[in-house]
Length: 315
Image 1: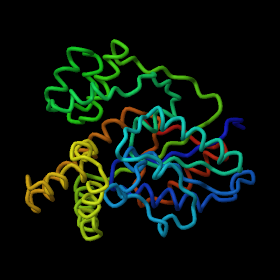
Image 2: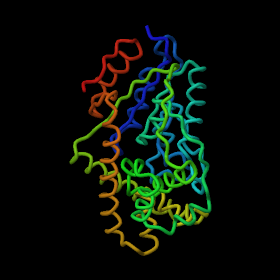
Image 3: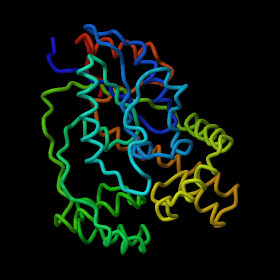
Image 4: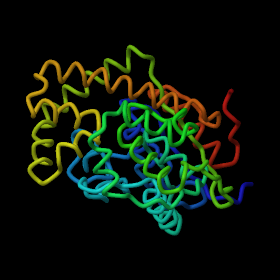
């Protein structure tokens, strides 16, 4: 029987129902195995860490949590950059505290780099943000940023999302500080064993879910949320950096898009984002892919894992 402590990961692209499944799983396996006290969820979402960004990020509500403890939500100011290195540090501390309580940690989210930092024990380079450099880069388009990165660090440019301004700026920043974005070192994890369960939907179903979810969020006050963030001192530039809902609503509020254009562009952008998420996750052959509705399959995977009966995923 494995001596490593067990952690379950629920991952996948946006709008696939990860949060609901994580809560269900936490409640299903509370008290198991070997006298665990309860399941607790650790968010792995690069925007849900920020305070005041609730509707646009689809942050789980208190009611939806159903008394299951959730961690790493609302831990940062949206005015400041939150790095993967900080996420890793906080997540590892949280995991240890849950295990001390004999709880079952369940990592849940769609930010692949956050998840990989924990599962693969990435050693993140120490390269603190450079405000003056960021100020200069803010004046450049994403195309110019990508071209600049290609000159600085061609290797990193080959595998970066060339439409993601935040990641482009960070990669340039690291390259300027360290000479190049280093290959992240893997630090073999001797303490934990992970079960990664991926949720996936076929393209048409995903687009329908994205559209329905957006409609619900607009009705819930998503535009007002962005207005409130702006009034609180979050700049237009910073809202653009958050991407998706915050980027296109910011453009709508500035009069650059009408409401119909905003909704259409946002639907397309979220669908494309989900595709990029899947491209990232599909590289990891350790992930067990399931239909979000297949709770019986998820339950069996979790039970087999917790009791050392798990089989490797089909590759």
